[in-house]
Length: 95
Length: 398
Image 1: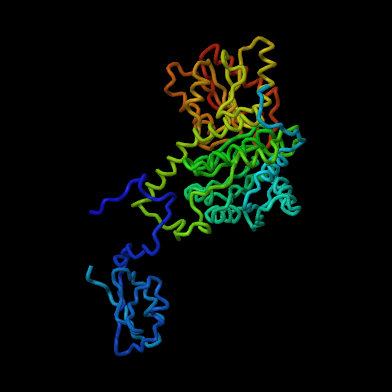
Image 2 (image 1 turned 30 degrees about the horizontal axis):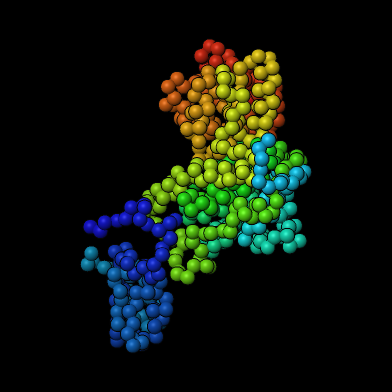
């Protein structure tokens, strides 16, 4: 188990002094439903990528290649916003 | 008379004038405030200084006290020396944000012009507003008069901004009794005040620091406790910081400000404890009763947070009865806030004295010498007999 720091060794007043460290916080365990992409139906409009509050839609060369399940909380915004109904929220039974 | 290093200027000032004048001399970067009786005059006077160009403070006139303290926090986190003032229900509206100012370790300073909390609605003095916030993480000092309102604010700034402390500070003075009463106040020259408080050195500054950082993020069970422990440590350093700030101030002004102040108490059988303007009345009553050969004295409690438990035990440990007068009720508690804290401070004194508690002056009920004399007489009876008939009583209620 990771050894957590004591009060003398952490930044003053709860400041986060390193930029971008939300990446270290693995919120994927919060998920009940996970998004699954239908590649056939997807036209790579990237609306899901724009809306995702956790930057968990993975894109390469302007194409959606999947989801970051380490951080995706399963909020379903991507599925709700998708104009092509190409994202389905399915019960995440892996955990 | 102590020789001081600067020549002071005597001015006729109300408590609110004195507060506004201290602010003017400090010339803070940002003030965010909302008017409420009896604080209004302070901020009105300060707004005039802003309008006249006497200060270059950004004065933010917000829509509520919740916003006032929130704006102060934003400004302080950006790296600005920040001040505000309020009273009673406005203070209550700041409540949740008070804790945030302290936990973010932002040394904002604020005048709290004491006024009774509603209800019933009332505009006059008691300490129910500031006493309720005694666990908010702020330094709390009670001024007896306009002179102290001026002096303690300057000392408060210096102690709050000390990097071993980094906690906000509130300076209390009694609504109307001090805020609207004119008296002669000795003020320091502008340069002396500027030198004393020095240039503001924030511990962190969002607008000035080169490296970006996040202020006020979510903090769960894994680190919240550690951050609170840090905050407690800041308060643990406050007594030394306050003492250092007061010592330096004494060299300038000749006025000494310890966490407690005693008057004819060394050999007294009965010592009354009071905060704020009532300490002045009690001092007069001590003289009257001493002239009658009665062994009485006074301990004025100036600092409530941090609570000066060692000084309290030292000042009261050898007397035969302590009479604690508090201008606030703590519903359901065993006595008023000062009574509870003070009895705890006396617990390990070998022959601790009996302590009785008088709640007085709620909603501005006038508390003259006759009432304090009653309380002293009961204290003398307890000192004589060693028997407390009633721990908590009410002074001047029908």
